[in-house]
Image (cartoon, rainbow, N blue to C red; front, side):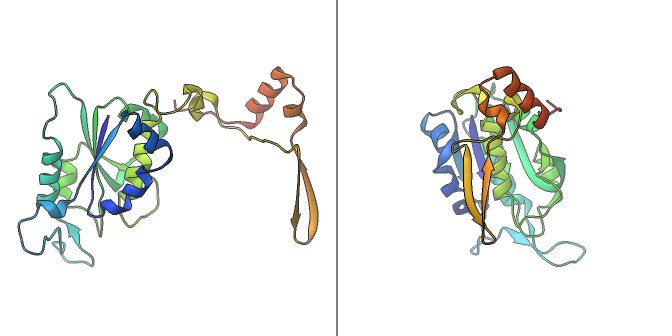
Length: 223
C-alpha cells in the first residue's frame, strides 16, 4: 500500500511515522508514505494556498487549484489496475469506524487531504475527493492527526503489519487486562492501597477465564 498525505504542514506527520507500528510497516516495505505540500503547486511569489471565503465570514479557505494539482501529481506512475481512493477530512464527512478501516485496507493507494483554517473549497469535496471522512463530533485545527489515525487503523488490517492477526481487537474482543504483580500496592491521598488481579485470571481455568472476558468485554458488533 502507498499512502499520500497532502498537507501544508508535513513536518507535523513525519515524526509519528518514525516510530512504533508505522515505522515497522515502512521498514518491512508493507507501506510507503509520501507528502505533497500544496504550496509546491502554486505559481505566485507568495505560494498562496488560501483565500477569504465568498459571501464573507471570518477565517481563510484552502484554494482548490493547489490541492487538485497535488492530488494529480500523487497519481503519477499509478497503474491502471491499482485501486485508489482520495479522502478529504471534514466535519461533514461520514464517521470513521473500524469497518471503514477494513474497507480502505483493500485499496492499493490512499490519498489523504488534510484541511486547515476554515476548511477546503467545496469543489474539492465534490469533484476531487472520492469521499469525506470525520473522526467524530469534535473540531481539530487540521487534518494531519486524522490522516495519521486513519493510516494506522487501516494498516493494522494489512497482513504482516501486526505480529499476529489475533492482535486485532475486533478479532479477540476488548476486555480488561492485567499483568504482574498479582497485588499492586500504591499510595493515594496519603493512604496505602492494595489492588488484586481478579481471581478468575489467577485460576488457571481457561474456560472460566474465557467466560470472565466475555462477561466484561466488548466486541465491535458492526463487524
